[in-house]
Image (cartoon, rainbow, N blue to C red; front, side, top):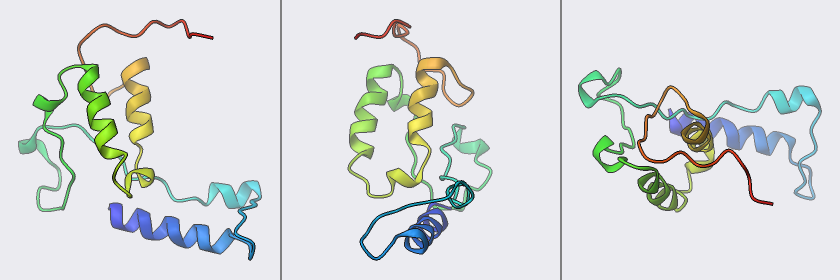
Length: 113
């Protein structure tokens, strides 16, 4: 899946990059951008595609939000991360989501200025 997303994203970028390296898009062109590969949370025995090549993070390594920060730092070193929806995973840990339930104090809803 990730290889397909990377390939399709590269083709999309090449298609709309001008000779000077700029990317200028119409709304329709922007909407053609491939969807990112999605992170999913499930038990290994519940894997819907156990034979596929996956990047796995054991649930035991994501016990608290600080663990998620450590994994994010690690994943930022991967050249394929921009082709995934990890950004949405991080957002879900703050606002609540269906993929992860990470214990620990929730961040304040007030933002520092």
